[in-house]
Length: 61
Length: 564
Image (cartoon, rainbow over all chains, first blue to last red; front, side, top):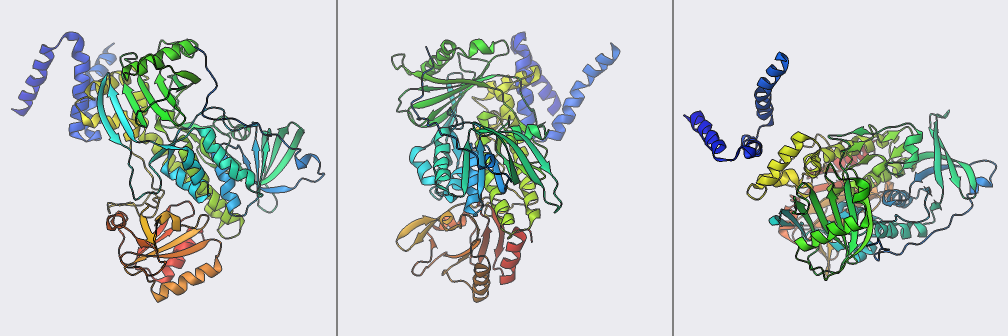
């Protein structure tokens, strides 16, 4: 249930703000969560996993 | 608006004298030549002269530095000056920085005092324009018969030769108003800055550390305006008049201020350097601080720079050593350039002096590089992120910086990322020193200070240190030294009268002139107990620490320190 709640929290926040604010909000959220996690190895791992779809798209092109 | 002459200093032009080498048929080999008479070169020469080593200094200019340059002088640098006997002259002119303020937009986010521990003889940060700091050191150099300072003598080439006796020797080609000549030296100290000729002549190049040289221009300017505001450093992130920038404003003595700000990507440097443009930014900044237009200021200096984070891969090249900016450069807003250079000179100075005097093993000279360079590199990495936040050179950095700035008002953790003032300050010279004690009175760290009572006087622990030698400090409740240690320290003082001193300090009760720790909590700050023993190096760093040592431990520690 934790993940569902988190998912909804981010979704609702994104829906509440103007589209132009999306990038800034997600950058701030990433920074806050990275600080909460306090583990650079896990953050770097998460960064690579979040990059994966971009890399897949680059391969397809 | 024009740039006017600054009021904070009066420059003197010094004259050059006929170099002896132009008259002599056979060139003498000088023990040491220091190239560059900036603050680091001057400190180097004084440190060597204190060890009775004669020094020739070569300085291409005929005066001290021509602008305010380094303003923030760290405690360690003042301690170096103290041991050279010039700190009183320095402190007379310097002011103490009191607070650091961080603003976002118009809002004050964070404010903290600079640490003003009563246990320390000198403040955390003193502020004085570099020409004054140089003058204080220069006055001591000019009075010193062992130092031959040659103005308007510029090095044009350096050749390091291998000699038969396995002893490198350098030959410098020097140009002077009286003609060109060759100068021979056993050791050369390059204190000639980032664009120094010694390094260039030897074909040595800097490596970029972390983000290296950042492609963003900064404008730095000095203006004069009398003010009663507290002596502070103020960091503005995204001020209304420069929303994409970071601006630093800080106070200097003599009613002078420094404003330091990053230019945007699309700002033209030549235009940005125009006095009218700079004056406009100064006015905007003053308005932000509610200082009215009726308070007129004078612009006295404008310059530009790019933050650099670079180091030579080695600070020793045969018999040539590099100190200060000649060895490494750091972004200006980190406040660590001259300060690190002074520590370089203090570190190398005592070692070179003792090696040349036959007291220490020549291998000790290699420890200058192995101690200083990793620490310099660590310091550059420590302020890396703050530098990124000041400069935001890439799209990704710009986006994350904006995220950090936007969070500043409400998220405390961001402060350490964006402000170099709050960045970590690594100081330990010994890489494998593990510290779980909660204090830093350990080998590899600079000796913390504490107040002592001696008779009716209050002095500091640092006042007991032998300026150009090792100091053995033993702490006991009643100020007595155990018999076994007394005979060892007497023996060492007899063998090394110039380089070794012992002091016993009482923790509880003292007799007559024995110094005693004045305040319990200050002793606790060093973890002092009955039988604590410290060996302090000439550069103020702790070489060794023992609890209830034997005589042979003291002997052994001193010999290790000398590389024997």
